[in-house]
Length: 157
Image (cartoon, rainbow, N blue to C red; front, side, top):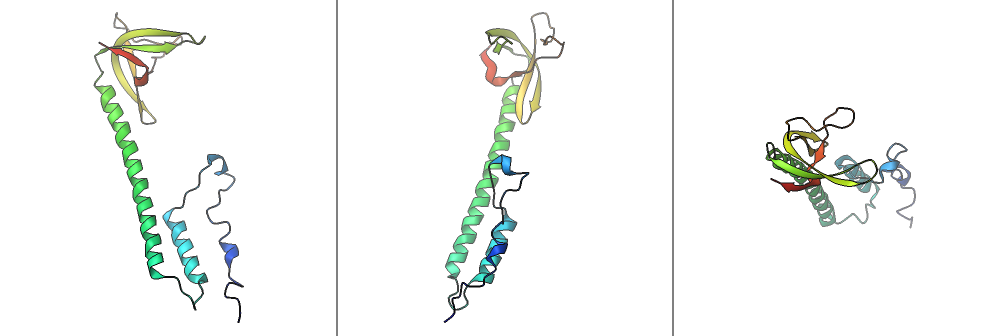
């Protein structure tokens, strides 16, 4: 009797979803829906007709993949919600006096107090500018408005 595994075209599956030179630095690899379906089709093509795979096993695999997709969608939605919530919280500071800790070029920490005047969102994170007691925007040495993170706040009011 012939070995049912001999001669299967496995070589085409060896490099599926392997990171390329462009993505090797990211350190992560994901199995997207298309790659999963390719693996499933390859599994069907290469299964031994005398001992087919149990259909409940296939349904279990599909259910697991569906659950994984749902988890990924939920995580993405939560990240968006978290970002939006942070921006809403920051916007509630407009017009309020806050004290922030800042670190200068020498590594020394100091406190700076001012009134929040604008909110700027960068990469989903809120930053704000402040005005001093004279109503002037607090700037860096180049005259550019300083952006403060909400995590720098040590006091409100």
